[in-house]
Image 1 (spheres, chains in turn blue, orange):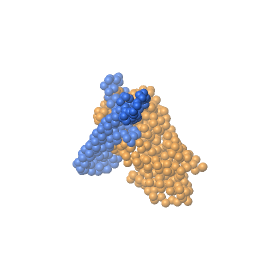
Image 2 (cartoon, rainbow over the protein chains, first blue to last red; image 1 turned 120 degrees about the vertical axis):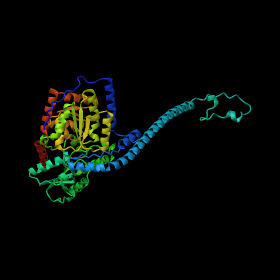
Image 3 (cartoon, each protein chain N blue to C red; image 1 turned 90 degrees about the vertical axis):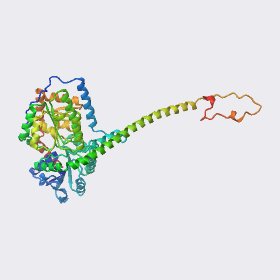
Length: 170
Length: 362
């Protein structure tokens, strides 16, 4: 039977372009994006936690629909007889699933914090290394050694080490 | 001459199952002996196919083995051995969904898909000729190392869609339609590659911006129960109440009732090897709004609204134009009917037979 509806004019005369409508559209965009297929990098911890959350819900509402009426009745009967048991199991599994995904969230958060601290440390270390490099390349000004009749004490005659700058270099 | 068909599962109300039965009809009418061999046969079709391990025909017989490739199966290895033993193996490729779509929701299915891809490559050196449902599928086969792929669309008996719908369902839906807005419909298994979440998202925006009385019906059994539950949560989160229904287990006559009251068919699927529901929509005079991905543009052939962007607002605006009564909608319906006629069973049967005879002549 071919469709002969002829279409349908919307009930509202003008589309809703209010700020609230745009906020809702943005919410819809975020929701659809969350469910879209995506490649997940092996080190994407947040993606892995989301993947756990996607499969961590256990449903007791077993589908009973069937093209055969008698089969649907049998499925409905089995469902009614076993629902107390399924619910008991599902509650525990759902609690477990939630705990695992919450644990994942905490780990992801902690990892992000550590990564941020580590990034900060890397920046500071880089600055220290840079500074050290600069210090190592400061040319040492040779001092005029006054003529002495007897040798200078050993301590004063020591050449400054390259790794331990002398006070004069500072 | 005998041309036997092999497929992993023969099931009723399944596009590949129906295609296999129609192919057997075409072959038998053309004078070939033809049987169907399967790994799994669903009970209503128990008499239509035999278990493939019971096939004891030998390589000495004049016979072609036609394999329908769409999923993983132990049959692939068995067919490889038959081909290595000198039997003539050809295939019809119906496409394999990329594992990426299932990895997140159903890891076991993702793993089976990867097996299916491996089997597809494994059979490539043994298959000198293949059919493909679409140019998209043909290109994928060639990329996979196949020698030649001839496009032959799925054999669909479009007359089946003109049987009377279930009257009780139709009456109920018509009564409901009197008090509601535009009726959106999508038909297809609940699977992540079909992107029902995008349809729900676009519908939510359409309802908010254009038509608060609109309704959405998604019809299809769940390939991914986890994805189905995520869709149900999404409906709650977007406060869509009972304006969205997700139905499975519908009989053919009930489904026809849903087609009869639909104002638009919205397909935002990202992976289709052909997309029979798009053909059904065109045949039944329902305007199509679809995302331009994989084989969908080819099947639609310009007879619907094709979108390069599936941002919910973009889709909602396209649907708003498609459902409004007027010349634009009428031309979409008319173009759809013309396009569907190209895929009539008579035309596609001729294409299939020409392909087979071309192969045998060479």
